[in-house]
Image 1 (cartoon, rainbow, N blue to C red):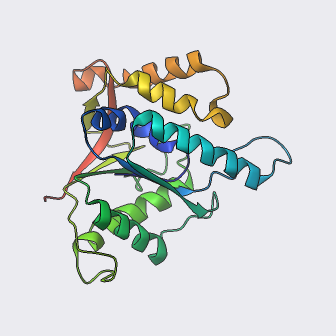
Image 2 (image 1 turned 135 degrees about the vertical axis):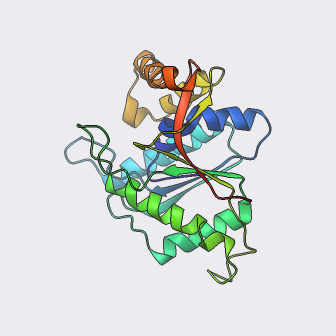
Amino acid sequence: MAVFAHPADAEIACGATLARWASQGCAVSLVVCARGDKGSHEPGADPDRVAAARMIEVERAARTLGLTAHEVLDNLDGEVVNSAELRELLVRRIRAWRPDVVFGHDPTATFIGSGYVNHRDHREVGAALVDAVAPAAASPLYFPDAGAPHRVPTLLLSGTVEIDTWVSVPDHLEAKVAALCCHRSQVGDGDESVATLVEQRATEGRKRSGSEWTEAFRRINLGG
């Protein structure tokens, strides 16, 4: 199960891993927590039209990756908060889908390197997800009407400065590129440039991971 803030976030963070596991017969699901309505640099763009276009892109990318379920919540970009309502919704999905692994944003990463400020939606969604996983989803006293408790064994967090886990994905980079290219409003028609960027990122951890093509995460082991 993957939980990310915006359309295309999951594809960027873990698209090849999702495609790999889906191809192996795993049920892979996705929750996108914001509509993507501010995903345009065009002056005067209509946020509702932007969001509608991005909804179609999410659908196409989900099919490309082989996801079994996906949904986009009706939160506005820049306004997602780690609220009881969001945590309850995530707990409901966790308890219904009962995942072995949950992917999401690392909420502790505010600055990544010296030139990137992590989007506040990433941090809020990451915090809501972590809180939903531990302890809420596993405890019957949190949101008792949200289904039978489920303990998530493993969290894999992306956009992190504390990478300790790499998933080898040499056979699924093509699927990641194809899924990202579904998000035309964000990447344009530059399929080759998308492929080059994906390959560059996939080789960043080569020396530390021992594998040429990887996706990198911070792993939290919670037992099962």
